[in-house]
Length: 294
Image (cartoon, rainbow, N blue to C red; front, side):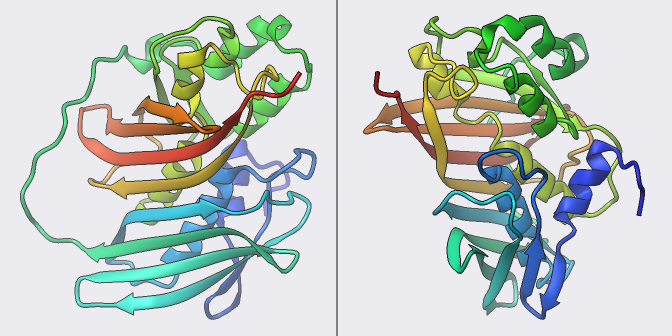
């Protein structure tokens, strides 16, 4: 084992679950310092667990998940896989993530043997070249004065250390107090090359998909989010559809918007495109978005 792993190697190690029974796996968290486990981590690990019980020629084409309880980053997570169905074309798996004897996350995933069919897609929206945009490492330290908690930048950078994430426009935590159109775009790719394993690329996109999806909800109301302390939020449910092959170590455009927020919840919808314009993934998430009481 590498004694000085890169952030990407550490993330890949996080996704390399330990098999403790035929359909039972164990995973760990990146840090025991943060207050709760990052939702994208749990979703990605659960998809890894599901995928390891499926023949490799069957690719993940969708997932539907609920976040039930906050995860404890100081404790291992056990993933129990239920083999719901193995058909001629489709395979369905259900995964429950358990900590301290209670379910914290539930995922259903479907896998399919490749087949040809009708083809069309929504066109990729305009976006600047990702290489023309500053990385998060360049962007965040310039705005340290905007964060009341000096540890926020460190936490943001740690969460994104394995991923090169580039905002097309300033993220909500840098423009708090200014209402904007409920739409945001980021480019992302891993900081290093990945193996030619389609499940790995899908799982890494799942990991990143929970980082910024509700930003568009915050933009509509001029809120900066947890980073500046003007919103309390958490992911509630998450769904993804994987339309076409892609590589998570090549630039992907995450185009996000929010059609609605109400009842203390906000809805984010998104499309993920490859740099050459192929629609790779569709994403929908509802999250808790509460304004703290004075």
